[in-house]
Structure formats: structure tokens, C-alpha cells
Length: 257
Image 1 (cartoon, rainbow, N blue to C red):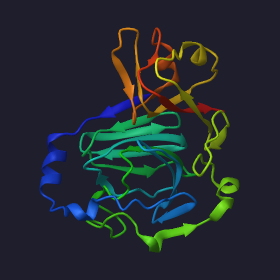
Image 2: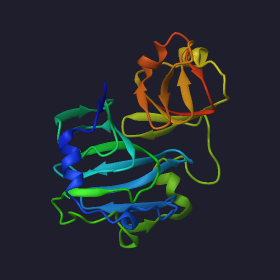
Image 3: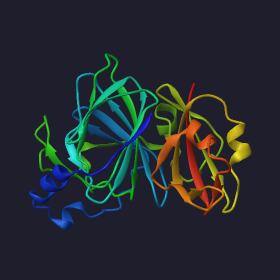
Image 4: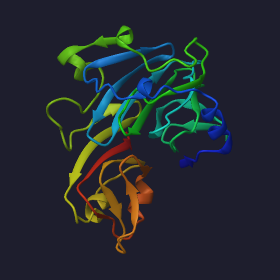
């Protein structure tokens, strides 16, 4: 299941009530490859990044939750890769199980709590990639109105990152190579503009999700269906009669193992 959460009137009211210093949410262009960012609820790290989309792995401990926050200028998706989460928004609460995903439009306040005993593994995509584009409305750990974590929360793991935390970041992209995160296998693929995805999709087995990391996928009528920052189920993409790339396309497949 993939559900899209649109910005509500209450989201707009809340963000308009907060004084935001534009400089505080400007991108500092810090390169997060090989870095773990510690959080009160666990930690997160960079899985993949290009010019359009950043992909992050989040490990959230049982009973802990992220702040109720929004990204004023970013569209984000949240995909649960193991365990079960309770996601709170101003539009309601949603239980999200492994294999489910939520798409948050810009400015949607949301928080994520791990409700399964083993905690949860979450994959988050965001476009654009500015980590400092963050406004915290509520927080159980004293971070209300504070910005994204700074140098004090970073631990550099060096070149050994791949042996501990699966990723596709660094000097070399490994298209077609599988990386396991939670209960799912992740793999990247690249497609030229004007390429049909039909045969490639038919060759894939299993259930899962597909995140668009670059470009646009359209149908035979050249109507745009998915663009960078979107996520859909593999089944939905397979059901498109003849999905075609409008531009160069980069995809992340997230398949149940």
C-alpha cells in the first residue's frame, strides 16, 4: 500500500505560526557518505544520493518516535522495511507495516513511532536533498524548534561502511547489485530516455516498491505518471500498459526477500 498525504489547512496554519529563519534551513552541502547521524530514537545514514533525491536508512527503537516535523520545501516518502510503525499527521494516524509507504507533500507535519517489539527499519527518500530543510513542531527529546543535527551527532565510519550498513553511495554506483536492508533487497537501475520498462519489469519476481530517483516515467500517451521523489508498488508499475522513460531514469527497487 502506498498512500499520499497532502498538506492540510492545519499544516498551513501551524507552519505560518512559526518564525523560520531562511538561513537556518539553507543547504550547507555537507557530504554524508560514510556518516551515521545519531538521534534520540536511534540513528540514520545515507543510502544513496544524486542531484535530485537523497535516500536514507532510519533505525528506530521500539517505543521511540521522531519529532512531529515538516519539510517546508521537500517532498518525502517513508517506506517501512521491517516492523510496524504508527505515523501521526494532522490528517490522522496510520499504521504502516513492512512493504507499505507514505508520500508526504511539502509542508506536511508527521512523526513516526516504532510500535513493533524489535523496532523498525525505514527507508526515507527526499527531494530536494537539503537535510537542513526541517521544522520541528513537537519533540519528546527537547528538540522542538531546533534544526537538523550538527557535527556533534555525526560518527564517521570510513570505508568500512558497506560491511555494516548497506548503501549505494560513494565514488562508484553499483547498478544491479543487491543490498539487504530490513526484510527487503534493494537494487539500482539506470535507463536511457525513451526506453520501455515493460520487459525489465516483467522479469522481476516478488512484491515490493519502486522509488524514482531521477527522471520521469510516462505511459504510451506521454502522460507523466511518476517523477523523481515518487514511490509506487512494483505491481502498480507493472500494470502500466507500456511504461516509458521521458528522460534518463534512475530507479531503486525494494523487493521482499
